[in-house]
Length: 346
Image 1 (cartoon, one colour):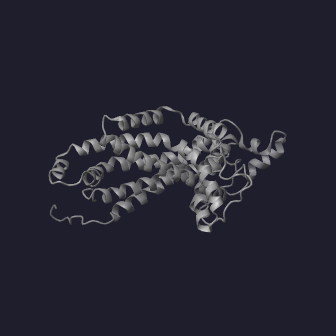
Image 2 (tube, one colour):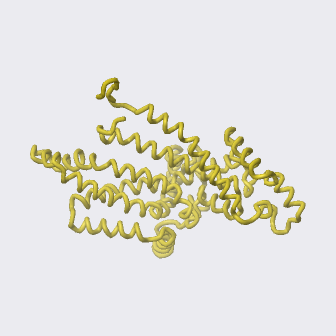
Image 3 (tube, helix red, strand yellow):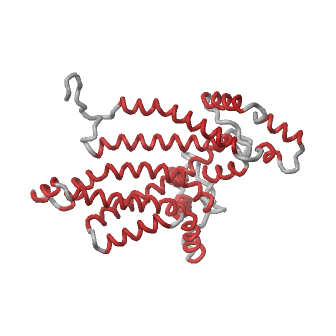
């Protein structure tokens, strides 16, 4: 190590984590500023939409006053920032409740769907990429290319409608929308995740019903990311398997599975982890369209309704939550680098 510097000996890079966490408020303030300006540029009057088509000028003016829309834009911006510092995201025009309470209600459904999508992406994408790299030029490799082509080219809205038509209308195997059947009661609210709450409370029939409902939207959400991760894994593993240390490992007589997974895949996982982190954030934002198609009661459906009613507070609240999750997800991926590859130590 250079003179005056202590070499890194492992563990969590505390200084790096603190720097990233200190930057997070600045990023959020930037997002708030941009969103505040953009939402106010959208044509339309949210007070008129909230008051209704038959409301008179006095009623519209009262609604505008109640939500602080009668103040100059700089005053509205300062008030919103002051509310954020107190943990107040504002009042939703569409529900007339605090946005924070709305997000507590809808956020678990979105996270559950996104996590299921990430799980499908990783459990299928990485093995498919490994199989394509090990069996390069064979039919599994060609099948992986077909999956990647479909995932990259099929629009998510078309895929959602197609799987609904096939598995619900024609085959009747899986439900088409919602988190549960109409007559099925939600499990006790422990975490807000129906799958986990069903397991924790022992409501197995509810858990099974929730699982059947999440399969189609999670698959629709994950196919594009699955295609990207499988191809990234394939290309990086092929590059790793061509290195000298792999030939040395094989020359020592190590079993092929040890060579591939312990030496090859571990060295190829750094770029894959980066893509997984980025795709996890993308899946969270991609749930918006999927939730509309499958009538999934999450943040996406809530945000789409907020946009149609020009609900400024709801739009900005959901965007802030999505931004924060992006930041934390990428921070977690950066920290995993040192776990996967000991050379990457700060």
